[in-house]
Length: 241
Image 1 (cartoon, rainbow, N blue to C red):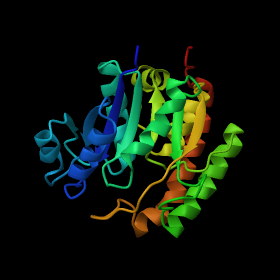
Image 2 (image 1 turned 90 degrees about the horizontal axis):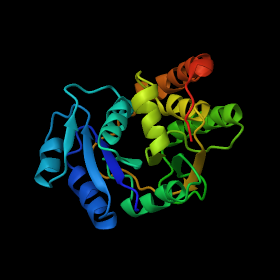
Image 3 (image 1 turned 180 degrees about the vertical axis):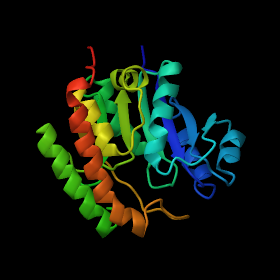
């Protein structure tokens, strides 16, 4: 049987990007289901999704970052019994055809958590210099902890197997604050981690959630979340295969 695959688009005030993002997915991934996780948008992001017959789960307020959507889409995927879950950002930076690369290791039973990395082949948009420095630093930190090289810990292009979906929907009933925490929790639970090279493009419209304050606070919050996850390590329930 073919796996049931869900694409969770995460978006906050992306009315200028969301229509083209959804259409790209409909054209490139016609066999995948799509849901929009609307992170408290105050514009027409959700209305556009509904107009395009895409179901939408809306937060009543903005969670403060994309990480605030994670538990929403894990619980949605678990409730509707999906085998594979993909995150896809609604800002137009991700390319739908690249999802096939990210999903393949899970379909082939090679991984449970797949990251689409911009930095393996260094093609396409490589993020901005200040943020790139932070990504490299904490990718190195995570690589040391996991004893496995990762290069793009903040990538929003990710896919998860049913094992990871069930872990976060049933065994880890707390909020997730950033991708360091998400990755390390998955690793300590026994998930098989894999990176694949992908190409991304620069945002064409709107503004990113990352600005000067985020650039300053990013390394501090990342360090706190890494330490916090390490402290939880012995209490993390394992994935059963």
